[in-house]
Length: 125
Image (cartoon, rainbow, N blue to C red):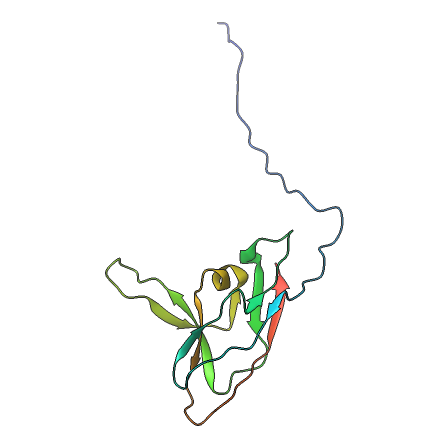
C-alpha cells in the first residue's frame, strides 16, 4: 500500500498592534442642546464628536457620569419586525457610531425644569 502526499489548510489569527499608545481622546464637538419643553432632540455628530483615527467609531463609548435631572437619554432601536415601530430604549452608555447614525435622543421629561446638564465620560475600547 502506498500513500500520496497529504495536504491540510490552516488559519492563523493575527492581531496588529500599534507601535505606540493611542493619542488621547479629544472632543471635536461639544455643543449645547436646545429643546422644546416635553419634547425630544437628537444628539447629532455636530454637537458631540470624539474622532480617533486608530479606533473604530463603535469602540468610542460615552458613559453618563452624572445623572440627568430633567430628562433621560434613549437610543432608537428598530422594531423586531418590519411592521413594528422603532423602540426608545433608556441608556447609560452609547458609541460614537450610534451618535453619527442619529439614534441617540435627549427626552425632556420634567415640565417645571427650564435647564438641565449631564456629564459624560468617553473612552476608547
